[in-house]
Length: 257
Image (tube, rainbow, N blue to C red; front, side, top):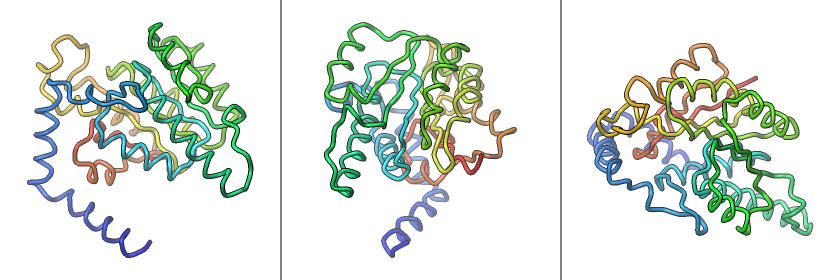
């Protein structure tokens, strides 16, 4: 670790005990959720529906892990799929430069696999027409249906470095089932990222038309899953660094098999 990296690590470590800074982050999350702040951003032309801070964290993870496969539950408009695919394209380009080989996107092994219970026709068409489409595979169906899980596991069996994002139905039972199905596919030293754990920290009245809320959400599912899975730990350094994130306690690092 060079001196700059040490300075960064020291600052991040100090943020955890900085009550003023942490409270400012929480207040921003509370103030920005109802106005749908996260709906304002896109990636290469597709709405991504993420906070920019989490997008930066995702970029850092992909660059560090260099996954062969990224599994995402929840597709929506496809922005996150495009984001992940573009990062994989960058990894391929770097590999080609280092090895002096010709880059052929259609022959790349790296892939993004997206699962959604309802891939709307206009979103599917836009994703399939995007320049990153050759790196993306989509499966329509419930992410916790046995036949869908089997399809995903069959794809994942061909890859050695796997990164997982869970961002579909946010109820406790659904996310816990997703964790049980897909977290084991996460490769060692990679991450299973569970989005919208912030629901636990936001008043229930902010989700009047949703089945999830405090006590029933992705964060409670993470806590339940970790009781019996010591191979994962919450990487709190990421949420301390970001301060503004929809995934507090949601960045799960796999320590071993």
